Image 1 (tube, rainbow, N blue to C red):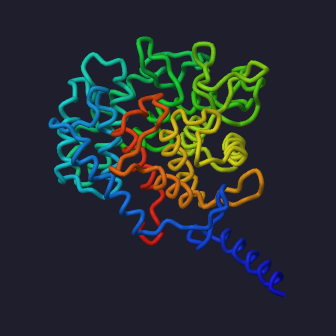
Image 2 (spheres, one colour):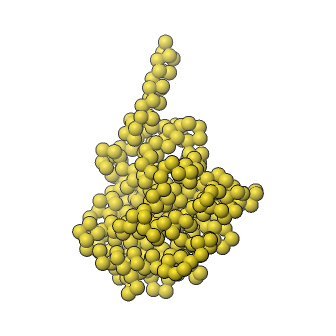
Image 3 (spheres, rainbow, N blue to C red):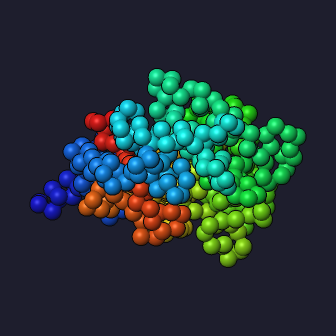
Length: 380
């Protein structure tokens, strides 16, 4: 009798766990049924803010300024998203530092940097978050024009068949890639551009070519070697994936780029019934993880986490059903994973330093941004 009662109780808990985002119990990969409380969530945020305030910020207002203004823009955006006011000295000093990076061409970047487009996109997202009273309207207008001018295919007769078309990139040759292009689309959206904006629609051409899905939107030839619906880094320069190639020589899909591609398509107005979105969602289901960047392990783990959260939030997905049919309350699971990884001083860091994730300021910024999408329901 007791055994039968326990079976019934377990079944009831399972049903409740799949009803909604606010379900009291939600299954995760480890079988945990705990929830992150508002108190635990806010305590973690407070510790992180205290770290940034006392240890992270330099006298000039920057965070890890030796790496350019990008980390400062990410941290300041995260602080704003965590409801630290624009006039709080921690944020105000960061914004003043970023303003000092503004150039006559409208860009916001470190002089002589090869990452002007990328740095400006991050700054646009930051200043858009701080622009509730319109104080940065002029700055944003100039920065938007700058990044649009740097897009492949902008302001000139460009060959749409060129695999660079529509993309955004950096470096000496400004080769476009999906990572930069997702920030480009997000920056334009933050500045007020809608899905029908010409630059966003050009970017969608490039994004579609980064997907391992053959269609009228993608005839690159790469997808046929690995038609799994995920995304890779770039079809330009002969095609590049940061993950290893498939045995067939295909460009392997991986987590951070798949969520970057999915988010970009949603922001560009591609609907949930479009085959491109469906294929990306299926890949995400088959490769669900909050503990690793699928296909890359620990490399880019915190970049992955915040891209994962942004994409699922943009899709308005509250529960993700994995390949085994288990439904995951991703917000709660991701928050729990981040709280588990927070260091005693309030910061986060990745033991795998690839892509600057050995920088505690940057990774703490990523973590706070991610947590902004995982706030407990009663505190949203």
